[in-house]
Structure formats: C-alpha cells, structure tokens
Amino acid sequence: MDIQLKRGLLDVCVLAAIKNEDSYGYKIIKDMQPYVKLSESTLYPILRRLESTGMLSVRSAEHNGRLRKYYHITPAGLQRIEDFKSEWKEMISIYHFVVRGEEEHE
Image (cartoon, rainbow, N blue to C red):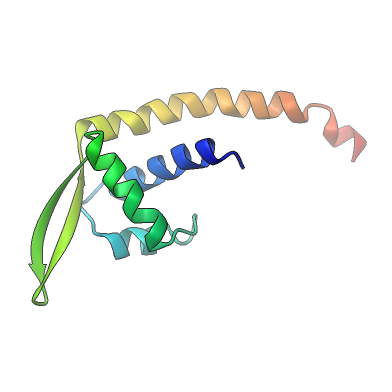
C-alpha cells in the first residue's frame, strides 16, 4: 500500500479509536488490534503529529504512581473523521472502477 495513503488511514483510525472517550497509548493499540495491527513505534509519532496539527489535545494524569498521557479528540479531529467518511465514498467508487469486469473473468 502507498505509504502516504496508509499514513492517512492510520491517522483516521487513531482518531476513531478515541472518538468516544479519552484514551492512552496502550489502550489505543489494544482497541485497534482487532482491525489494524499497530506498534508503539508507529503509534506515538502519529499521536504527536495529530497533536501538532490540533486534532488531539493531551493531558497527563497519575495512574498507579506513574504519569500517563491521555489523548482527547478536538473538533478538528472530529472534522477529519467526517472528511474521511466523505472521501472514502470516492475511494470506493475508484476501487469499483479499477476492478470492474474482473468478477466475470475469475
């Protein structure tokens, strides 16, 4: 898969993982696991990028004697999810165009 396309998809997946409640790194990975395999080394740069673009905000809170970062989706992050859903309709149309007629030849 094209690296830029995958990067954009992973950004939206991370936003969707925290859409309904604030979350932290390990839980985000765990929540995404049934759908997308994601390592910590991939997740944390995504979180930093989403924070720097204003799609996430971050707060630290103590948990079992350690500080844990909790990520919160912002209105810009919610808008990115909505934009993705609109864009995806076009991607589905492109996919159908690319594979048209293949079912008949298989």
